[in-house]
Structure formats: structure tokens, C-alpha cells
Image: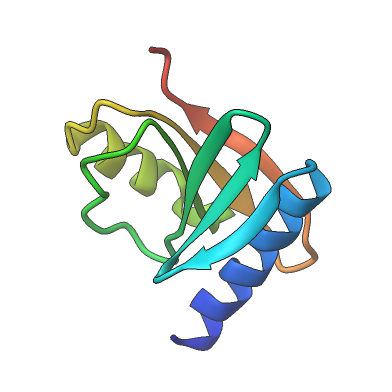
Length: 101
């Protein structure tokens, strides 16, 4: 895992932990669980082919890549609910795109 990806994983873990989720590593992704909901969190430093399965997904990327990741996820044809979180080096973040299912 490269430095950028490692940093995104750390930021994603912190974001979801702060939101009250229990976060576990699941291969290249994280699994965030709270009550009945499991969110598959994918750190995505650069736009790439998104997963096609799951119910809830969140893609965490650098703020400057949010639009490109949103386009890839939208074009990917997944049937899950999704969101893209854009993060900055200082740890600030915002949910910049989400499905409207």
C-alpha cells in the first residue's frame, strides 16, 4: 500500500470511528458497522473501477479527485447506495457526492 493510500485508510478509519462505527480492515477496504448497517469503505486515491456489489458503500478520496471518482462510481453500474468523501491533508472532510436511490 502506498503512502497516499495508507493515509486515506487512516483518515477513513478516523471518520467512521468518530461517527460511532466499529471499523475493521477487510482486505483493501474497511468494514464500518453500526447497529444494523454495514458500510464497505473503499479508500480510492485515484479513480478506478468501483466494486459492483454491496448494499452501502463509501469511497474516500482526496478532495481534488472527488468528481472523477463520482463519475466512475456512477458509470460503474453498481446497485448499492454510495457516497464519496473528499478529504484534505489536515483531516478535514466533506461528503461531496452521494447516490439518490
